[in-house]
Image 1 (cartoon, rainbow, N blue to C red):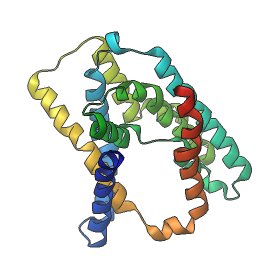
Image 2 (image 1 turned 120 degrees about the horizontal axis):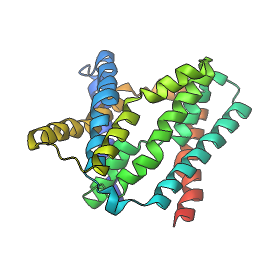
Image 3 (image 1 turned 60 degrees about the vertical axis):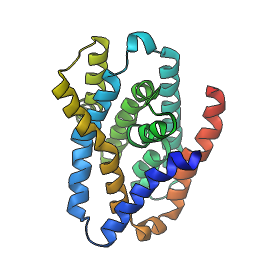
Length: 237
């Protein structure tokens, strides 16, 4: 059951890696794919997921609040630990994001669809966690780069993921229905988000670079996949 839910997702990443090795995926393709995902396909996926959820019926404030609290605790805890113990301060943003930030919209949606056939509570989790992922990521990056508060606020306000969440939420609350041709167009673009993102992930992966930073990589993965799950999943239950 677990393998059926997870292996197909990771096999697409492997395909991306293989295509990069044989030269079918180029660095320019990866750069463009990531840009398209961030600015087009992921916002469309979020808009579609959120607008197709009736929040007047399915809204669960306690669940959303829990997602927000856990995300915040994980971010500030890992940020404090990274700044205190990581010798190479240039790696702080990467370690912090690798530790607290999950791929909720891409991998989360894919896993839940594979397991249950629909997105279920994913839209509510997206509201609680994804905006904070992006806000906190902008904060930690601009803090390291020394950017002023104005640039930080601008980075948050113009983030396509956050814009997509706000638009999708408003469309759901006001029960806006697009004409079928528009709805299908958004749906087709949204369907590209996960496979395109996974191919880009596979194509951009470099074993040599990962081995050079094995310590931070393993630490970030352990915090996200083991420690946080061991602490916060039982609390949620």
